[in-house]
Length: 479
Image 1 (tube, rainbow, N blue to C red):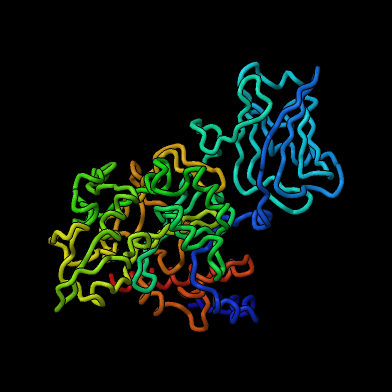
Image 2: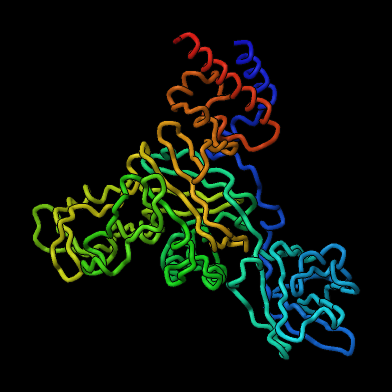
């Protein structure tokens, strides 16, 4: 009890007038890595890269879409590490120089001719390259000069994994309910997105622009140009075989032997290969595209109770049945559980696009109704993130519903989840935490979820220790 009271007192001292502001925040896990502040400024796009050869040196002109400086200046010391030529940064190349040009939107790289090969030459401008005017690149730009050419070709998706910086999964949060939906977070070893990016699971580029692009008047999440870039990088869209739709893996016991919805693709069960990618611990792993096929798409028709005329499935929730959001160093996965269309439409039959009846009486839009089962989540090698980081090896985590923890495939120990929210640590339920939490919002599930600043770190740790102490006391008394 002493430790519990100490946690309450410290929380009151530090919280001060911030409680009302925190109350307005939505509950989120503590973020171990923040998106760099400069990445939040306006994006700087590279328009072209050209080369001018001299007798002893070469000038590489990088033209941007915005002004980079008000006056000409040398920025080799501050920016030289952000550009490489054939794998060597400008700081590693003797006599290399980098300068901003004020009269145009240009940066000029000057290197000795010995820095180039006789064949192809590759130049990379890294994400986070910041101009004096405050604009910053938000993706990695790879350009290739073919032998003898002075105009470089843009490489959107390199086949060489070494062209990208590696990120790995550090932990996975315990699945929890968000209303009727289920959600959890995958945490990576570094930032993976330049800003909050939502609904990246949408299959069609055109559809994603319609949901969140430039034409959306109510606070669009993306510009159409951003989405075009993500498409060219093959990060999004089902027509890119390397997109996240095919590199994000999920499975649970309920999905073993999963089949596509019988009304999709005019009932042709062979239209989509539903073979699981792997089976780990008795659980099949499917890619996100396959998981979406569980849900009836827009080609289906249905008949409502008391009616005979078939209606089209224009309200299909297939693109939103699984949602992938990215921000800072985390991926959020949301499994739809709040669809009421089966009841609202009073559906009695679901038909193929040709009007053939199936045995389905549900659109199957609710995708993970039971969290208390073994699950799998994984990222495949080649999973490329919006800011140019990449996963270089397959990695899978298995969920133990009894221990409420994720275990990395091949490991025998449970994974420590330092990024997880307090209400899921130690295996507590929400009811248990509510009973144990001190009054006044310090140390309980809601307060812990809303802590973002270092000033609250001490009360968070003390409150967590207090709850654990009480829990251990309970266990001793029950023996």
